[in-house]
Amino acid sequence: DAKTTQPPSMDCAEGRAANLPCNHSTISGNEYVYWYRQIHSQGPQYIIHGLKNNETNEMASLIITEDRKSSTLILPHATLRDTAVYYCIVRVDNAGNMLTFGGGTRLMVKP
Amino acid sequence: NAGVMQNPRHLVRRRGQEARLRCSPMKGHSHVYWYRQLPEEGLKFMVYLQKENIIDESGMPKERFSAEFPKEGPSILRIQQVVRGDSAAYFCASSQGAHTYEQYFGPGTRLTVT
Image (cartoon, rainbow over all chains, first blue to last red; front, side, top):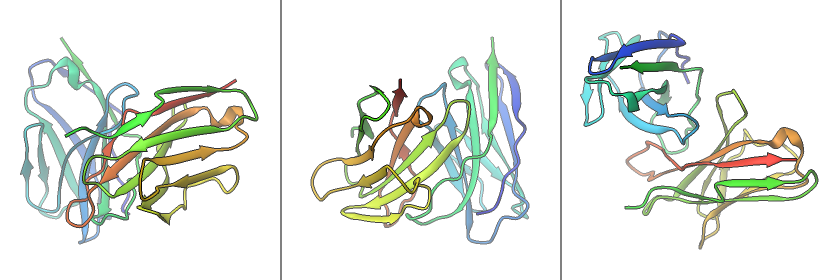
């Protein structure tokens, strides 16, 4: 699986959009971009994933650049409960592939 | 639809004892994954199982650790003769397989070895 690079930490004001970047310059054509988050020692929570098109669900939006070398996770209106470590993971999309967690980005949402 | 369930949530064992961690996947999910998170570290994959089969155990320590996912009942991660270095949070995840591959995690079991 391709490696990812994320900033170690970010701050965001409550109510504002949080934009979390991820670089994955060695991504292969059959690898998807997945985002998970871990809120203070809880189990990781699936957020969203995509291949090349932008994706949106009730939690977030995922913007993938045209060359697929980077992506941005957008939390449109961050709340204090969004404070967590956010992990960007690239993997081939089949059931047998484990998730390889890097260091992630520690997002601190401040009032 | 209940999520992934793990029990116990907290487990304390003395050195040399056995630890048994249980994971019930989400309804309809037949793929189970175990991950370990050591204190102040990231999650590391341990083992991937389907019903009655171990598919990938490349992340499992070679000794003392074993996993199963029987036809009936939860998946079990067993650690024999625990040592202090086994103290960690153990997370189980499940996926539906077939057409949807995102993994959903349980709340974890925090093992403390005294």
